[in-house]
Amino acid sequence: MSKIVVVGGGAAGLELVTRLGRSFGRRGQHDIVLIEPASHHYWKPRLHEIAAGTFDSELDAVSYLQHGYCNQYQTIQASMSRLDRQRKEIEVRDAQGQTSMVNYDYLVIAVGAVSNDFKTEGVSEHCLFLDSAQQAQQAWEQINPLLRAQGEHHISIVGAGATGVELAAELAKVNEKLNRYRHDANLKVTLIEASERILPAGPACMSEKVHNALVKNGVEIKTNTRVKRAESGKLITANGEVINANLQLWAAGIKCAPWLAQLDGLETNRLNQLKVNATLTTTVDDSIFVIGDSAECPQPDGSVVPPRAQAANQAAGHLATQIKRRLKGKEMKPFVFNDGGMVIAVGHNYAVGSLMNNKLILRGRLVRNLYDTIFRLHQRILFGWGRVTALVVLKRLKGTLNPFYKNNIS
Image (cartoon, rainbow, N blue to C red; front, side, top):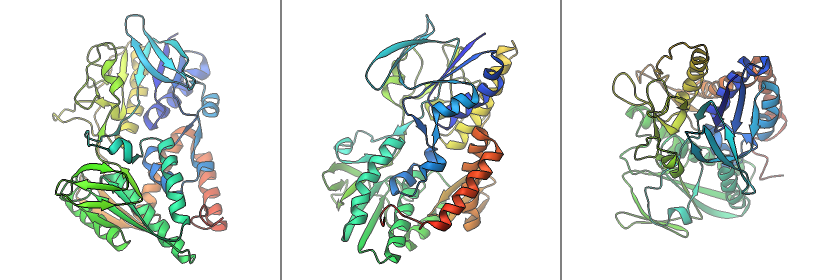
């Protein structure tokens, strides 16, 4: 019997322990353990909905304790703090600061990445981040009073990648809906991007369509604008422009937590991502695997796997199969990422998608349904189609009985 420990309960980590628990835990063949400091799982691409107050936590959040019981894996609510490769142990720390050691035969690190402030002065003190459900909730607690108060209020979002764009669109739609209720608050959203266009990692034609949709929804967009310094209530750009705001959010770039670069000799890059082989094993220890945004995984064409949700999902499914092969003494196969395109939500009824290696750009409500389907596919792995169907029906019923945005009018 082997003990497989997975650190991180994001999309990749949770899907992995779900697959392994169903394969091994129910038959008592191997011990599956998940290390995660939070009590509930939230799909990271939807954190912007938590910040905007439109996320349905009753239906779309997952309790690790309950899910672990149903899928035969153990959950330890703590965070990893140290690694001892010789003893095959990790040190974990709980919310009270108490530490303990957890042994493993195979270790999987799937802790994801966080926003990169590029060491910009004042950002950590004066900007909010959306790297976790807790941070998104903190953002909502500051956005909510602005939506309740009369008059005009300004929110600046730095970084026009997927997170920044979707947050700006969600806030603009919330503001539009509240105005329909004859609400006196008016939210002005400014999206700031250092590159020459929004969604710089996507195709230019997709960027243009999303840009036009945001402007139509009332979002002010500033491209070619690099933030030099953040202060209380304002951002100072490299050309000296002052952008005032009641609230400032930072969603630019990614990096991994510094502690990953201090894990008993594991190799990392400048972003603190752990370097792995094509089989997702670390370059110095083949009993340790890394998946998701915290891995720098090489591809056959010389590139590396991009830090995207679909890449994390694919890596989790691949590794679940390869761990089974490893336990049977078979050779592990390399992970090759299959890019399924990009879909960006622009509010609840509109999205823009880039498919077929950017050869096909689609937009509209049907593409928004595709965006929702991607989330349902994630839930299908966690629960199966029966429960997912029930969740979809319940959500439609709630949407019919309740206003689009009930938090600010109740």
